[in-house]
Image (cartoon, rainbow, N blue to C red; front, side, top):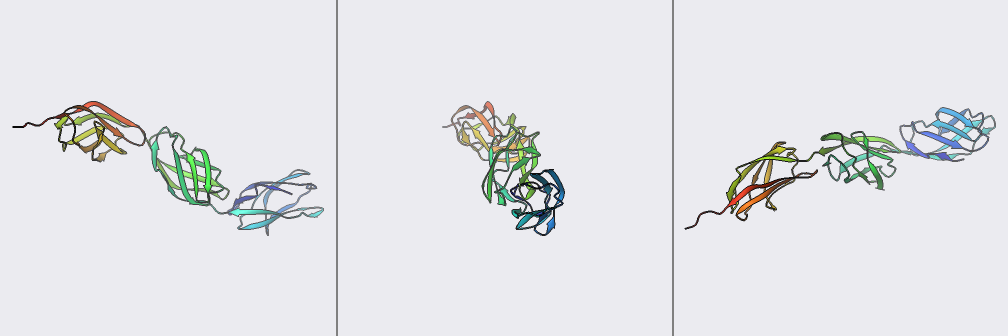
Length: 249
């Protein structure tokens, strides 16, 4: 007499289907010592019920006019606990794979980001699973939920990031020896991960979502592209900064 699913939340509420024979007239379904609710006789070979709360492994039996059935095991699973995300931000379009670490993840059946289902959810072990982030509705933070046989757990935050833009630089020129403090303005700059001048990385700091402060690295005389990159993509200001050779005597 199989039961499907054969595991569920310690808090109860798991809808199960029990199949066998001679089930007509089933009056009770018992999980260990506790009665199930919502017992419905579908046919002589099938009964559905909702599990009560419990813990560990219990025997499930049915009571019919003919007596009590043989027992089948049901496993209670605790709610999952999530401790970390391998990446806490990513592109608004989604598509990147993240690893969720925690406990009780081996029975994961779904992951959502802001209520939108992730794809390719793969439990790697009881402490780790991977999922492909879905596209977001809008840039900004969303909650991440994991659903397992033990229930649903929230508690992690993931931030969708939109593409950056560059609208201006000040100043637009400086010595080829580097060291010029440059203010970069634009949009979606608050999550910048790198700034380059002519392909060379520059030290920078985020002022706010529309402003960065960077210091030019050494370069070669002439105009160079300035590129700002964030977890979504990159913005390029073509030939936006000009390196100037200093005077010599």
